[in-house]
Length: 117
Image 1 (cartoon, rainbow, N blue to C red):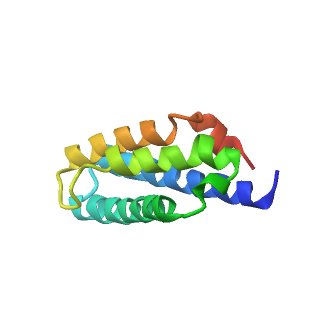
Image 2 (image 1 turned 90 degrees about the vertical axis):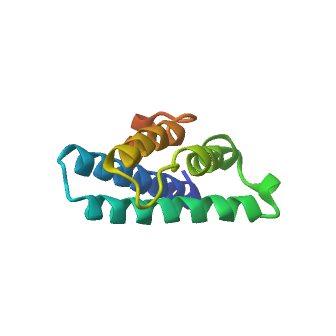
Image 3 (image 1 turned 60 degrees about the vertical axis):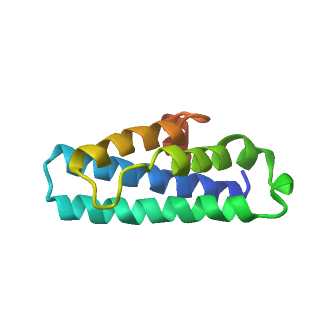
């Protein structure tokens, strides 16, 4: 597989690991400030990524893999999976993480994203 696709897989793997980390922090009753801080970083990263793809003028020239799996997952994750405010409750952030994980793995299974080396 070409290097660009490998980078996309690695980026998605990083996002999914961050989601899992936040879910774990919520389940372990970590301090809310740590949960919020970690959530804010992830939220900003995904929002920035979605804004980038929204503004790319030659989106149609993106390869099929990006158009079929990655870009829709990022756009939907940004729009629907990050609804909790950055100062929201642990429960709100946890619900957002469940939704974000669903959106990020809607077009390609979680296992497929993670197992790629």
